[in-house]
Image (cartoon, rainbow, N blue to C red; front, top):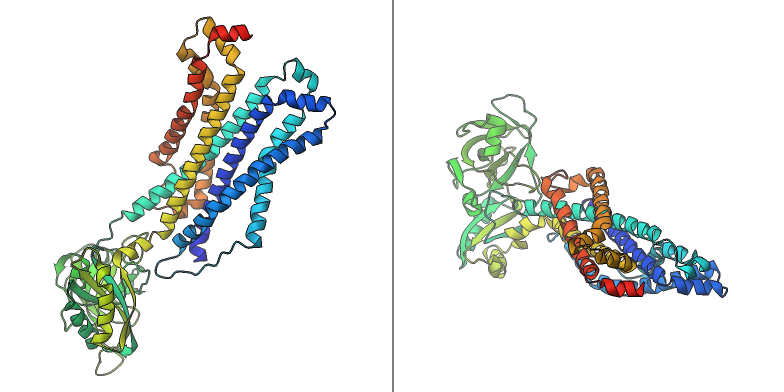
Length: 536
């Protein structure tokens, strides 16, 4: 479980850190704007004897109050969200009991994070506020262009991190979509799997008796037996030999199934026949198209034979079926040979039927919700043979969905953080543009007085920000391209260079920038030139 989740949670940790940095740059921008509005206040404090360190303390304490409030709100959200995320990590077929108490370690981490963030987004505004020169401020203030350049640089930083978060989120969402919609080659609807165990290995005839008993349960359409369900991750493989030739180096995967299994799974036959009640393993086999392609160059394999190198078991192919996923939806279709559920022990001279201690009954129901029959089927197994019991009941849909637990978690959380990052970047853009219009309202009034049109004013307001957004997007794209190789193993049939993966973050940022700039543009074009000139 650690091996499976460590890479994905590491990526999520990086995404969270990027969102945190976006928030820090956002608040730093707002505090720089607030510092400009309080420039005269700071100048007066310095004039009456306040030292620079005292002003730094003042601004940092104000930042700390904001951070502590955010800590309280974040703790409330984490109280609900953390167990939810853990529940999504747990695999349905083997849930882990993760004990995550809010102990002193969690409290210490939250406190250190809060103080660190306070220092990160509060230090720069505090230093700028403490560096005010009273004489210059009281005469009209410092050059506003330097402050705007700093704020625009922070905007570019926000956009770069936002693009990177959106880029990673789009890759994870695309991976989940493609995996969850990949064709498996069989129908999982209305399918129930009953993992069954016996107190001691029992002959196949007793397993057949239980299958016959399950077929009499009202609502049951078809029943078959298999060594295990498809896509649970189990496998049995071996090299094989054709006509005594050495193996070609490609593994063949095996699964014991009963007559009617392919019909119950809705895997269509291409040629040949299904197993008969008298068929045993070794003896005959049904293979898929990938098997025919790997070992017979795509020719019809019906009537041909092969030998397993492990155990030297001989099989004659009697059926050819369509390809179906065997072990994982991430893997390509594997060469599969389905052999009879009834096996003989070739080590004995009279070849008795080999007993089995575990297997899975595949039940297709008439009901669209097969779980409605779960309890009845569970009780029916020991009624048929008291030495058998059902250890686990799952729908095939549940098994299929368990294949994408990690991808679903990554897509869901990455999309959530992408939305948060986009909102933060939009708020930051709005704040900077609003501050810029306030600082330049006299200039805008003069431009309008000498004949500037509304479109000219709008273009003038958003020109600098547009450049910063473009620069930030290019930096984010470079960061994404350079980091993609570290996480490409988490993706499925998705590349960072795919046009949709690049277009979606770009369009989202452009849309957010346009939406964030709209209030500032409206505010600018509504400025009354006469009023501004009178104020001047």
